[in-house]
Every structure is written in structure tokens, then in C-alpha cells.
Image (cartoon, rainbow, N blue to C red; front, side, top):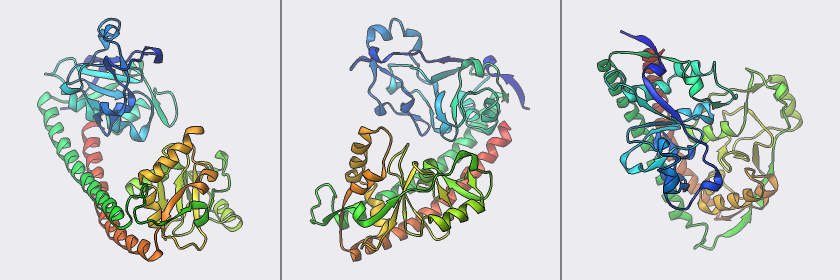
Length: 398
């Protein structure tokens, strides 16, 4: 039997303190950062912030976490990534001190609440829907203990909670195995690239080096104003949609423009053609997506730049893969250092890469297409398992 209880009746929770930058040290007690929450786990290798032991065990001793604590990010997080921005503290993480924009949870009574059951509840649509009534911000979550105190959650007998956790853990385990399959296919593609072309940094095969501007016409789109966005019509992509397309092979689009506006811009300014390469220019820089036959969309100027083919002997899949190498990644990172978070058309034009013979690029593309076909099958399977997970969570928490 399911009942509803106030979160404060079941959990103790605490928001992290606002440790200032001038308090950071090079050694001492590790300081928790939102960046440490990666794909549902706590990864302390992603930051190197510490505070002194004197402060950690003095002023901030009440913020030292314990093994088994559930940590979540509570500020500046996109709703779509919230599921990934949480994790449990393990013994090897200790000692560890909380910091701003994080909240930790403990079950007040383990005979009443399984903390892993609560973790799955946080990932549910039911929690996010309830949170939406209280949060500040728009596309990003910003909330704290004052919001959580107003919220309720469904509660079952502890034995039922444990059964629910086992079921959801099993489904999640299937997802992890399939995601590992994707990583293995990506590793295979990487191995093929380096075997055929060598490391672009050292260029051991002495390929000719070209600027992207010599190979492509590089530009962006005509500006579409926010007042012209609609809820149906032709998909309108920002950088975040391109990142998802590149990662998952599909996107649940949020924004559109009218058919009339798309036709007007297509006729007057043109649209991306099959084989053109979209590159994210803000946010996560340098993520690429090759335009496919079935694609029909428009995209946001300034967020995305487009590499249009202009007759050079270059294969899109080869260039697309070059963007994944440290050689090109370092160029993008160096460029963005001067103007934080941007990869401009000017910078793209001067980005360099080795250019092997077209026949070799095409041979590589054929191998990659075979791998991509396998990835698409795995990605479809992942979507089906994700749908099952969402259905079961809605059944328990909805």
C-alpha cells in the first residue's frame, strides 16, 4: 500500500556552505564540487579543490560527509541532466567536505526509508513535476532545503521499497551494459582511425596539413528571434540539441520555427545540406554532427557553425572524427581561452588538420558506417530500456 509523506519526516538533509575561493588550498581535505557528480556517481578526479584541515575539522566539521550519504547538485543544473548529477559517498572518498550548490541526504530511519529508493524518486518525473512548482530559474534547476521542506513523496513498506530498488537496479544495470557496448564501439572506431592515419599531433605519415577554411565554406545561420520560436513546425536546434544528436542519435526537440519562416530562409540563405558538418560554438565546444538525408531543421546563429562542402577532396566522416582527437580538441580549447566558451567562424577557419588522400578517407568512412550501424541498433535498444525504466518509475512514483 502506498502512502504520501513529507520529505522532512523521512530524511535529514543539509545544504553545503559557501566556501570562498581565497580559502582554497593545494592540500588538506577535498572540497566537494558540482563537477564531481558525474553520470550518477561521485568522481573526485574531476576537481582539485581543498580546504585546510584546520578549517575542515573546525569551522566546517558539520559539513564533513559520511559514507552512504546521497549527494545531489541543487543549482545551475539543466533539468535534462539532473539525473546524472547525484551520487553516493563511498569510503574511498573520505575525508570530504561539502560546498555550495550541493545537498546531502540521510535516511532518518532506515527501517522506514531505503535511501536508494529515495534516489530513484529524485530521478522520477513525479519529483521534477513537484519541484517545478517551487524552483527558481528556467531551463536550470535552482533549489534548496526550503523547497524540499514543502514536498511530499510516495512511501511503501520497507520490504516493498527494497523490491522496487532491486527491480530498478536491474533495469539500470542493463542500461549500463548497453552504454558500455557503445563505448567499446567508439574505442574500435578510434583504433581504426589511429591505425590508418597515425596520431595527428605527430603526423607520422607526413600528410599534408590544411586549414578548415581551405576545405569548407564556414558560416552560421540567419538569426531567428525568440519571438519567432514556436511549439510545432520545423525543428530549431541550439548547441544542446546538437550535443544530444551526436551522443544519442536522436533528440526530443523543444523548439520549432514555422514552415513559412523555414521556407523563406531556405530560399534566401540556404540550409545545411547532406554531408555538411554542424559544430557547437558555445557550451560544450566542438561537438560535431553530420547532416543526414532525412534531416530537416534550422539552427541558432552563434550557437552552431556549419562546415559547408565546397568541392575539396575531403570526407565528412574523417573530419568529424578529427574533431574528437586531442589534436583538434587542443586547438579549440586554446582558441576558447581568450574568449571563454566560444568557437567562432574566424577560429574555425584557421583550425588545422592533416589531410590524407581522399581514397583513404573514404575507406575509413566505410568502416565507420558499419560501426555506426551497430551503434544505432544499440542506441535504439537503449531508448527501449529507458522507456521501460520510465514506465516502471511512473508506476511506483506517479
